[in-house]
Image 1 (cartoon, helix red, strand yellow):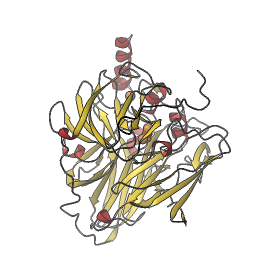
Image 2 (cartoon, rainbow, N blue to C red):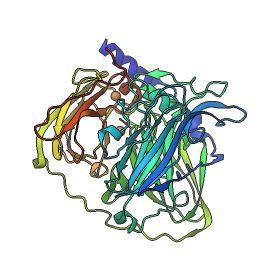
Image 3 (cartoon, rainbow, N blue to C red):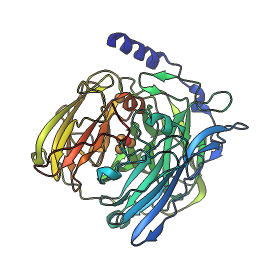
Length: 478
Ligand code: C2O
Ligand code: CU
Ligand code: CU
């Protein structure tokens, strides 16, 4: 059965027609930039508001697509908060079904994390509050209901959450939002003839793959550039597709940050692979009059779902460009991770739709860890399907891959990594500050269909000596 499944998967992924048309669609639409979310200060707390509601979007000429969005028809506004600030997000569920909102990459108490244990019934408000306490980074938010995450994310519920801090702010990096600091939420979609999402490529073993690329909800986008350097905050917001981002003319760029924040120093790169949920901040230089496309090249089918080439975004530089200071040679203090800091080791084997031979069970704690400690987690993808590994609450460091030091692009803070088949990833994971013996955090494959199928586990963070007391999820009576 597994062998047959694998054979079929390879047939799909190697013989699948390349959506060649996607590579040749001229960029015709100005890139949408998600609005900055307004906020108000109430008793020293920065308060945001997000309403999840149904909408309709005009992606294709003359057709309207039913979508979901926060504060609008598709996707959501960009939240920005500074390290040290207390924030509250008032989430109103105006859908006719349950939802939840998870702050992907955020260090925060489990009860505020927005996972499957925090459903918001239709018509109700959920208002988590926490203090931002982590380095400047590009984070994001999306629904996280057990077994229904993919559906809601694919329909449009997702947005960015940018954390700022004084160290990052003191660096000469582009940071004018929407001008030279650009959020890019990259998603693949396909459209039925009436404009609805769906049609085209169907369910694969890795989930649903689309044959068109949306960036911030824009098909075939271009961006007018007015500065010599542009910072692109790339988020793979797709549910299954993996990308390998590069520029069509092969030009190099600086990779300056990954999931959890700045790298120690810029890494000169010609491409950057991202699996679903991962982020990368890159800085690219343009000359006056340049027209160059950010593309995704066909990745290795042994790792990547649906290897195919896509145009992602055309950058159009103006005839004259405002000067940008050079990218600083040093970005952040990033001490080397030390496995000796770990108090214990655990192993995670990803296979089929299971982790360590078990599917997700809302009433089972798969691991209990002690607050303010670090652990070494060893993760192996045991079958030749694409998988990834994401851990809530924390930013981890990659110690080694098959015993070798990780490539520079995996040298910083990460919350999600792609897992190549049959390689051993050792990561150092810290669990600081927040103990709660009743509410778990999640770890899972971030290919959303796999996650929904049960490729997820739960861990509790407890005070030393405390007994775990995982509370049964509301409304779960089996
Ligand atoms: Cu972005 Cu548990 O997810
Ligand atoms: Cu997450
Ligand atoms: Cu998976």
